[in-house]
Length: 174
Ligand SMILES: [Fe+2]
Image (cartoon, rainbow, N blue to C red; front, top):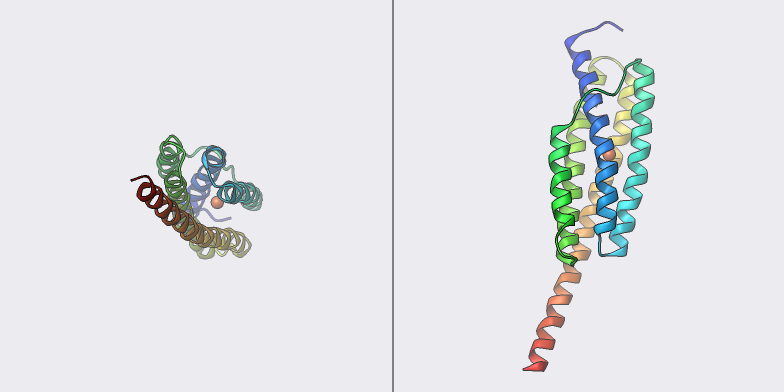
């Protein structure tokens, strides 16, 4: 392949995404343990499995482009994962679940921006097969983000219910 600044940028982008996805694997393991709601823990587990598939897809891309995926760090993802660790340390509650979902959404939005840029660069380099693989992951990240948005609604109605129960028990005891 003819080397160009665009190609170099694509390689760097893929290396940073690869590091970001590997950080997600570690971060999700912490978040699975921290989730109070079994449904949320299960959702994070599904996402962990999906992330492993996305890493395998990046390895397929690396083979196609004959590049090495190591050597870059994603500072952005490191920051989000740190926020996840802080959320996981809160005392166990529905509010902690809400915060964990918010962190998971930050992960998705970050990844969507990175994959979109990588796909655009791959298209510019006429690497259609690579662009298609990146689009597949981008579609998965978008649908994960949707699932998280639905999870926020569920947690919020649980929080309202809990608050109503608390008010009722306070009224009964006074
Ligand atoms: Fe991902």
